[in-house]
Length: 287
Picture 1 (cartoon, rainbow, N blue to C red):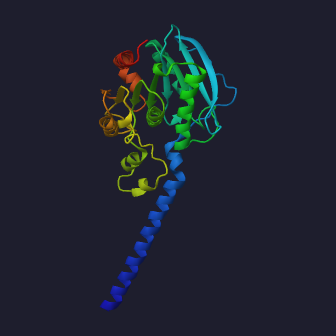
Picture 2 (cartoon, rainbow, N blue to C red; picture 1 turned 120 degrees about the vertical axis):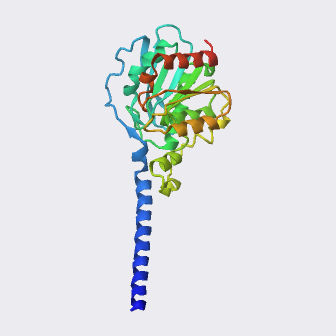
Picture 3 (cartoon, one colour; picture 1 turned 60 degrees about the horizontal axis):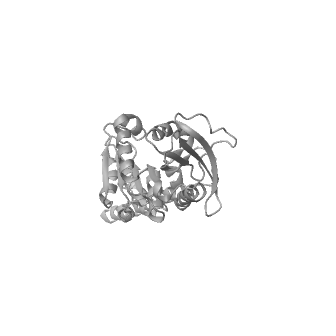
């Protein structure tokens, strides 16, 4: 009887092990197949939709089309301040929506004395293609090259601003192109570390095809850097923002926004936020 129970126990153990193995493989396949759905949340804009609505403080609002090195056509807004700014913010936005959702904040950047070049990654807004890590890196380089070579903005006057996922693209671009000043807001160290935060006990992060590893790159960027994050950020953990700051080489600054959720930094930060950003830009990139 004891031998029979032992055999049954072994069969149950084997079947359980097989079930867990199949479940593990299924979860890995799920991560691989659905990874892009977790990372990218683009919103398309219909062709022909007006984008030149009035923006307070803007002298001109120009819609631009340019091409990445792999032939993908991208869309952008180039907004010039009412006075001669002589410095331009190259804006790398986050993983959701499109440039239309950021139009309201453009006026605040214009008010601190910078022009704004805000572009949509592939698959976002009017831009062609589908998003991927490699593709978004190409988009960042294409945006920089268009701004400096076609629009004629001097490289020493281009301020990189990357928010959330855009922080990783800004960091990558800064490793390949001249960067006089870099602002990183509410950003993470890598998507693998983000995955470990979302699902702590699941090793699926080791099977992800996307990495966006800013932590390994930030130390090689010598430009002045301003890191902005909130302890209340419910999307990108504060500790990842601090880890990214710790990995960065000097000169660097960390500015904490108290009680701001991920998409509330501009609003909750208020006047003090804009004074800090303006001070950093004025010290880093002269008129």
